[in-house]
Amino acid sequence: METLAVSFPPVEISIKLAISIGIGMLVGFEREWAQKDLGARTFTIVAIAGTISILAAPTIAFITFIGVLVIVLLTGLRNLRESKPVEATTSAAVIVVFVLGILVGEGHHYTPVATAILMTMLLSLKPALTHFTGGLLVTEVRSAVLLCLLAFVIYPVLPDRAVDPWGLINPREAWLTIIVIAALGFANYVLLKLYSARGLYYSALLGGLVNSTAAIAELASSLKGQTGEGEARDIAPIAITIDLLTVVAMFVRNLLILAIFAHEAVIDAAGPLLTMIVVAAILIWAQRKQVRDVVEPPRLSSPLQLSKVLSFGLIFLAIEVIGNLGQRHFGHFGILIVSVIGGLVSSASTTGAAAALAMRHSIDMRTAGLAVVFTSMTSALSNLPLLHQQIRNPAVTGRAALLSCGIVILGLLAVVAVALL
Image 1 (tube, helix red, strand yellow):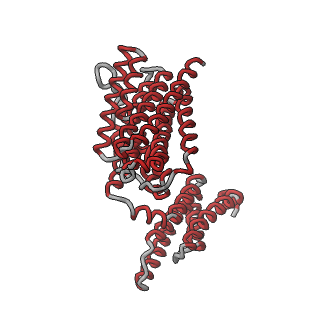
Image 2 (cartoon, one colour):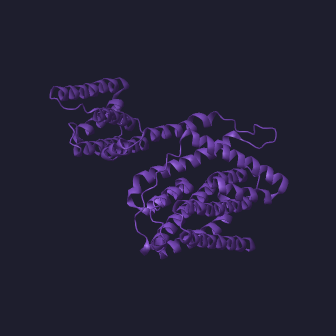
Image 3 (cartoon, helix red, strand yellow):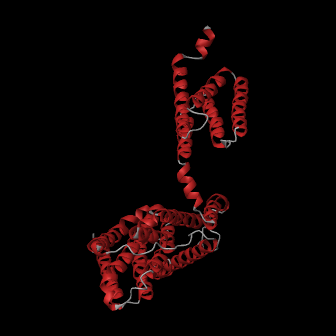
């Protein structure tokens, strides 16, 4: 008995038992709430069994685990005999709780507690997950798999060095930028899919985060039937709100990309971009009472189709190479010209390229920040031809152009103010 007292100090055992009981009850209460056969008492006993069995001996833990499997098997057989569904998820949870009990017995605290919380969250989210997966398209599942392929299969094997004689392309750095931007686009796509039904604001904002050009084209296309001169006053607030919201979202996205890869450059980009964001927000707020929620959510395709990833990657590499060469031959002025032109093609790609160049010290942080500001301005103005093409109302597009140009001019004034500071 004296040996046992030394081997199992009361305070340490009390802590381990308390953690085991907490883990078992946490998972068990959720199963009880879900009206499963195995509830709080069963899960708590299984967690305690895992803890005390490993304290006794590994052999005892193995024998106890076999007993847990027998309980799971008998429960499943009873459900089959009574024509009830086999609770595979609950059975798996029982096994995991037993393993967590063993970890507690071996002195681990964080791992079993964190695992129990995450598992309970997954169990409780069954209705939401079922509803979400039921609405998934095959292309969306493939997009998620493609993102994992890009991040966890291809990225680790890429060389972390320049592979060309001129030192222009580092495959791993370029691929990391592609992964991050693609992941942001996919996350925004998921949010758009979940919340687009709430109306114009979510549709334009989230659509702009995914692809501002596609968003403005899709959202404005729903106004095609309202192109008469007499309806221009009604259409203008809606069209302008669509345009400004997608532009604001694009500004925020580009600033976020810059912050991820070259956070020091945010100091130079934040002033002009935030100025344009605030001005656009004021204009949107001023027209809020005239906006009618008549616009269908954008029908954006998944941003992680293989063709899109390859296209984005090629654009990114082209802008990075051209920007690097422009920097070498024309100084900072070269990369700024490239950024202005790149905004007409893809502001996200141009932003990523500028940030990657700054990260490798090919350009300074100030130049990278200015490049992101200029490519964002160009991208904002490039929406205007699309808006006009969709609604074909000169009065509306003229007003949108006036406001957009005003926002860009204020942004340029902010650039000058930052330069003078």
